[in-house]
Image 1 (spheres, rainbow, N blue to C red):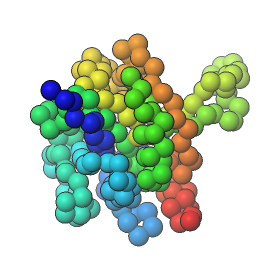
Image 2: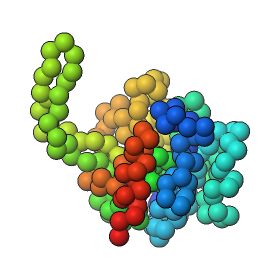
Image 3: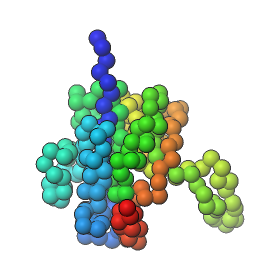
Image 4: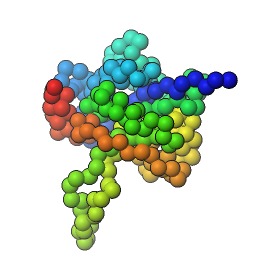
Length: 228
């Protein structure tokens, strides 16, 4: 039987509460410019002709998502867990039967509203048919210090700051997260894949794809989104 061409599927875990934002609502729903943060993130995938479909993972009792997702733009999965790892794992289980084992899944943080179709295309093109997969990341350019009783400088050669999307085959990602046991150690999808002894490909991203973590980050994200 002829194997069908792999599809590119976007998966946005958005079940977090963003405690460090000191907000009354989860940070993914805070306004950035004229739109909620999550809507910017969703629009990036909707605008890419390479993405076959987008899934958004929220908690079972999320009261905001229905007003954010345009009809037909994405599928909402109400199976979010207590951690990012659990949310992604639950979503992959929910999609069993919907996705083929060789389909590519691009997992992207809801709090990275600066993603765009060009970066999505760059990642897909660079990863190509890589047997493992890959992720957007930025090479470290600042001098790195290790704190503590004795401050020291860490060599920055070969150091990268991980971004998202992180792109892996459906079956590989399922296997990697099924083998993971400690959500504190598995801080992203790539670390779960690395725990299997595999090496994802690093594809240079862009500072516009920053993760909004603190209140000051909102203004930075707005500046990037307002740029031509």
